[in-house]
Image (cartoon, rainbow, N blue to C red; front, side, top):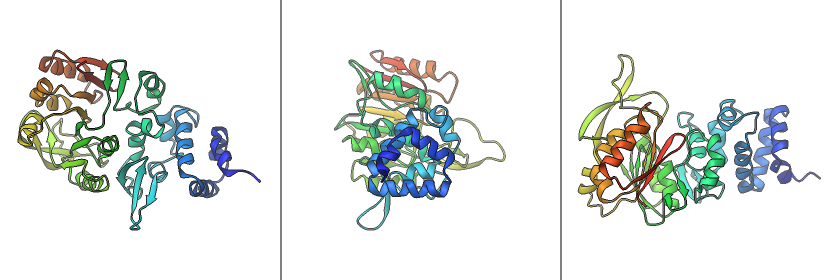
Length: 327
């Protein structure tokens, strides 16, 4: 008799199965395998994706829809004791978004959770070099000797552009406390559910971070997480009025005694956020993992703002992110 678990563990067999076996039978096979051993299947699928399965790199593989976003989220879907559903990515909890294609959980799985899923939470340079080419944007952690931009137990984390709270859930899993900033109502509503699922380690803040206190319009592009306030909306684009604050003001108002880590993916507003965090950068020197792909001059502009606020920072530019720390 064929051992189904050994069968699905072979990436060669997975590739052949997904190419030649009817989809209905594939679904039955994967469902049966998940019932037998969810952890093995999850890691097998991710390892297959990382290996460039499906005839190309990970991004191409996902684009072919052999695994769509709902299916990827479903690999970590579980039923809680009270009968509700949640996504449990090795101890980081998210709401069940499998029924709503607006939430592209596949990107979160790969960029936010990949290292956690594969058990490589130290984000060593060797592993980042290995996996980064197959990741859409790269991880939110990087370590090279003394240069260590990773979330630690007890850290106070700022999650700028929290979306549904994927990074905050991961930070909570590491033992950190996260202040998650998300100005868009639909995402914020989902973020509050993520807060509930992860206990008291995530504090949701319904605001964006910028260089001044104000209200502005954010453009809704129809895909949750892709909204932007970095440009003026056109006549036909849908918008939502949101609140903007600065990290310096929030830190003072909340009486925070330290900030250890800032993650930012805010669709071109990263420079504004850093400008409004000069005192935080100078006084607390938090580790930084900042997206640099939204505007063409982001790598230079963001580096200049950081060093102007605190010249002690060492900065490393990678694929789509800037990592910074004071050693």
